[in-house]
Image (tube, rainbow over all chains, first blue to last red; front, top):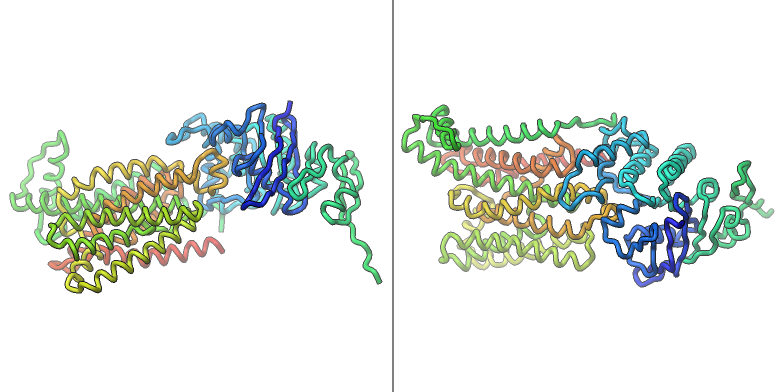
Length: 261
Length: 344
């Protein structure tokens, strides 16, 4: 069964059409990676799914039409982590993770014992509970991503939308964060939709790729079907070689032509 | 620098400290002044007024009148004004995610100033109640105009603040023009602008109490919503809240709080910046704590400032706006310097 079904989503920003009737779907507990050159509409699609942009077309989560849901109802199904977060530097990790319970609270009500327990569980799961008292301003890049994921997990969503979850991280921390996200969807059954710049990482972690170009779906399917030299060189205007790693995932390597002499 | 910079007080301790500060400020203010009141007799006379407490006090009838008809109403009005300005400042700071926003921004002070000036210049014969009413209405109108002008350009916080600056400058220009045409009222307007609690009465306290209660209750109830706003509009919306709606409600309540304070005290600056900032340093940035603690601390701070204002150059009085600015300006610079240090 599809956890997310995006059908004919069209978005206009400042009267410019940024997405043209985009459709895609991912099954429950799957990981869909949106790839494509800068300005292709990846972030716009994520924001539309998160309910942050007016759009045409329908988006369903577990058969529920999101158009029929209001803010809180939608936020109980979907957690969204933008690429560049606002992290109040003096807020503590514990206070920040607890904000994830917001969609489950009434307008004026305070978080109760159950909410604190769920926030604490999420913090344990992402191994950030041991520094719950630290200020957000004091965290390293890797710690920051784990704390943000803990807040998203405390939200208990069905779907996790991640915009470039590995930007600003070194290669080791990129892999750590991607493994954590993978664990999350396996152990909690959370469906993941993320944008990813690194095509090899997209092929290694996401089971399903959607290649966007100029607001349209250029290709979609298994990594091996989407990540071809021909398609990448055409859509990205890039020179690449595609090989296969021992596990069978396509590996995209940039190639430089020897300079003409 | 380690990650755990700035140890915080536990919430219960923070409430205890803030409440003790307010009680201490009240006692100091009740005991200090031109008439020399016996401390023990004064405290027993005050305690005697607490329901179900009956204590005989040796305070003379004259001293009793000084305490209950002069000093106490002034303390109560001062505490109300200080608490209102501090809560309004903290609320605006949450709404705009900016610790340097004051309760007088968004055209509130300029509107009150224009309202009071118009009342003094053109309604001089309308009795003493015209000025507070005009200041109250002017303050609310200033914020309303700033909000409506800012909301047209989108609901961004920077747009709203800039609109507030523009509206403030415009209203101040009108006020300056009116004043320049009627220089005979200059001194009266000027002394109002600098703020004073010298005319405080029980009646004044009773008149602003309902507005104070409603506005403070609304702002305090929105502490958690302001905490959610602190992660930015985009993520606050993704968490299922409505930043624009929260902003409108909190701005309206803060405007009412600040207008009630201005009506009885004139313009008193800096309280709304300094008090919430000190509270944040002690108790952390969560508005669920910052708002109620600012209420208590702001009340105590203004009672102390007013005690200074009426005793330092006794029998004359310093304008209380001058006292708070003398304390506030250095602290303001300290805020600027310490926030700059954090960013580097």
